[in-house]
Length: 389
Ligand SMILES: [Zn+2]
Image (tube, rainbow, N blue to C red; front, side, top):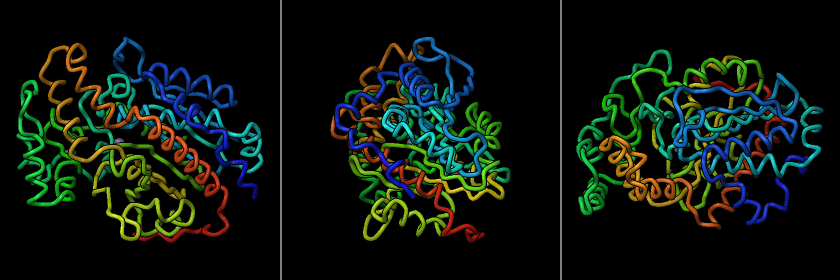
């Protein structure tokens, strides 16, 4: 099998990589659509209610490349956490621009379709928030039919007044000291689990999973059969940032980890697996994930969903940025007119301006997609995966 066809081009130098990062949501959208069309992709758009920061329409764009309704697919989704869309969009853009010209023909001949889902949370991307228009953390919103939109971890309840203080941030509010004290007493993993695993009772709080399916979830529900359901094998990369070591990629398996782990190690390399060897785990248990939901509705499809997380700054800094931005957002009538500094910090925490971070993330993203395509084609080894349920 000519793997080189699906591999990133060696021309992915720093200048090219950095140019793939958009200035804002509208530019990301325009560039994505132009690049997808140039590559011969079929485009579809799904508009959400509301408008963006500059009055623009809020749209999830989908580009499909390769034979329609192919049995084997590679899904690459970006921007589920709005502001992380700067990074995810850059990877999709880089792939569209750098893929070999004959890749499309190659996909046609091999019966594999690449489905790029751009900006799953266009509101958050445009407004530079992690959440959607209803303050919902969309990767906590995809609950399964037997799960209820209620409940909050005890650790979150304890920390709620600290996480979501009312009013505008003051110059000194002891955030770092309190967070460090909590970590000293309970450990960083306990903090992550208590805080970030999701809550359904504080609508203005951080990591709020919503009280019903979000606007994005409704689109995904409608389209899931089209994107996943009709295929026999789907490899899905959901692109995220803000968790893990600076510039390093980790692959997280929100569901089915026992089944996927050895396959994932073989295809992507063991060093990328979260918790591999002596490496510390960066993830924590979460419910309501997009991947978990797709896995549940996939039916007979051999669905293999992975979260690709690209690390930026320390968890304390990232949490501090989220806390400050959420605080400003809810404390002011017109948050777009205030708090530019906290918005800049949030964007920096999820898509650093640093040139080498941007370059290494795009390179790793291209490599991941190339390997996912290889994995999508290679079904000789595990045609009937063992279901561990
Ligand atoms: Zn994310």
